[in-house]
Length: 274
Image 1 (cartoon, one colour):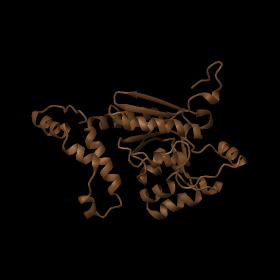
Image 2 (spheres, helix red, strand yellow):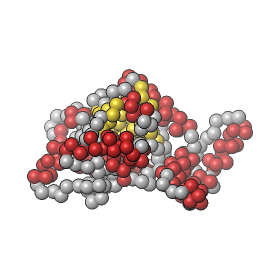
Image 3 (cartoon, rainbow, N blue to C red):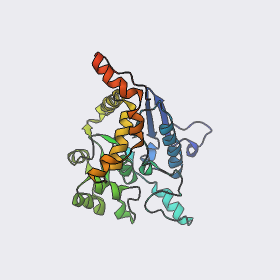
C-alpha cells in the first residue's frame, strides 16, 4: 500500500483484508521488507482470524503476501534486535502472552479451510505459517526454509513440530538442523504443497481450488477438517468413537439432507450452511 500524504508509513495497516463471495483474502502487506512479521502485524492478524471464524458467510480463507518476492520471511528480526536491546524477554515455542495470540499457528480450532498462496520466499515463520494452512498452492519461484538454527533461534511457531509430522523424520531433521532451502518442486515431491504452477498462473490456480472448496458443503468441510486434525495422532479405534462438534452439526443439518436430494433430482445442491 503506498504511503499517504501526511500519514507516516509506520502507521499504515500491516495486513489487507477483503471478503467477497464467501472468500476471505488476507494479504501480508509489507513488501518493502519481504512481508516480515512485526508485532503490529500479529495483532492485526489476530482480529482477522477472529472475524474469519465468526462470519458464517466466509467459507474459505486465502492467505498470501504482497508483491512478487515473498509470501513472508517470518519474524521481523530488526524489531527483535530492538526488543533485545530494550530487555524484552525472548520468545520460545508458541506465542502465548505475546501480541496477536493465538496466532494462526496455534489456532487449532479454526474450522474454515485456509489456502496459502505462496510466491517467492516463505522463510522461518513464513514457512511455519504456510505449514499451518490446510492447502499450499505455490509458484515455481517459491522457496521454503527454516533458517532459525543458523540465527541462534528455534522454529518456535510450530515448524519444529509440524515439519516432523508432515515429512519423514530424517528428512525433516535435515531441513530443521541446517536451514537448507527447499524449492517448490521438491516441496511438491515431498507432499508439502498441493500444486506448483508458473507465477503467472498462480492466481488462476488458487481460484480453481477456491471454487472447488466452495462447491463442497460448508458444514461437511468444517466437519472433515476438525475430524482429520483432531484424530491424526489418535489410535484408529479411538478416532471412530470420538465425538466431533462440527460433525454433530453437519449430521443434523439441512445440508445433510440437501446433498442426497440434489443428487437424486439431478441438480446442483443449494448449501445453506445449516
